[in-house]
Length: 260
Image (cartoon, rainbow, N blue to C red):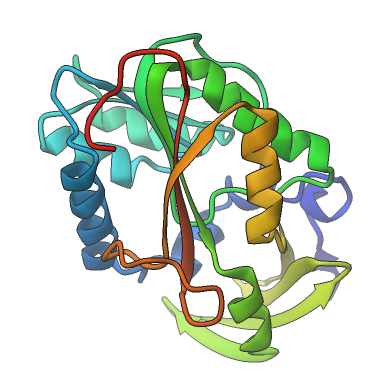
């Protein structure tokens, strides 16, 4: 039986169809909602989010974090490259919650948001360093002066050292066979499965971006790094033991929003 290799394996942008695929949401349906909400609550308290401040959720997916933030009284805009994700998210829209199809490499709105959030490793998908820098610079343009950009990324070195090369995960009767490798500082996840008479192969590719890489990106965007946390409880970052690299940066030359 031929393997259906959608355009994501034939083009440079693997994520274009994988994030639009219903199988993406099936595979990751058990993501820890409690952990995600704990992190967002901790960020909101630490950064002193105000209902008066506009928040941009960068690469929002189906909008679960945007919706949760909005339920706390915040004015939130979510953007994502996937039309299907945004179509799904729009069922939750109200006068303080909006969603748009948008490529985060491109400028969205200038000088509008007090906080831009890029959460749960929604970064590092692109082939070139220039594209990564474009994301950071576009996010910076979206911030008001004094606004803050939060980037939450995996602790790359720890992930690579503990990489599980193969696993099988069964969800909704589908047996996903997942292999992981590191190729030229890119973490590659190959996902094979069969469903409804078809055999499928998708791939995820996330650049193994280092702490120093991020500092370089922020410097190019003229962002000031205020804090680096290592987990969703906002404990300090330690390169050998932390699960995450969570950067809180600020656009200079203006009013500050929330705590420093």
